[in-house]
Image 1: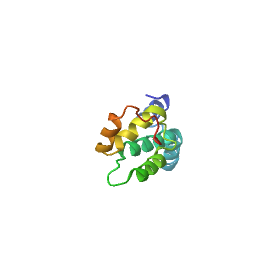
Image 2 (image 1 turned 90 degrees about the vertical axis):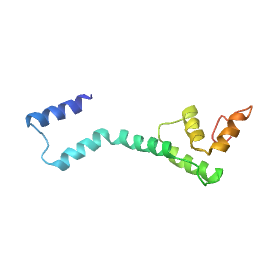
Image 3 (image 1 turned 60 degrees about the vertical axis):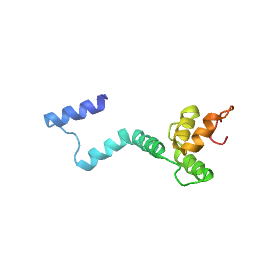
Image 4 (image 1 turned 135 degrees about the vertical axis):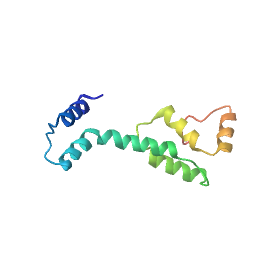
Amino acid sequence: MDIWKENIIEDLEVGEVKYKSAEEFLTEIKKEFGGRNEESVKVAELKKMKQGGQNMEEFVQDFKRVARNNGYEGQPLIEEFKRGINGVIRRKLMETENQPGSIEQ
């Protein structure tokens, strides 16, 4: 556990809270954990993506929009893309001799 969290929990348990208001406490939490949470939300959104009834061009555009600045790149990003496309297309891609090395391919 992070030292910051340990200190907060200890302060709360012994009643020595250094924040004047709940708002000040929440601001500190957002400042400490906000960046990681945003990335987690983007990764979760990417993992939920499915092509469904979209044509491939629409799905590629949506996928790129969600994938931007989410921490994935290279092969992990391609694997997420393949996971999201429709099964028939995914099987066709797996059967090809020269597997695509990028989303554009």
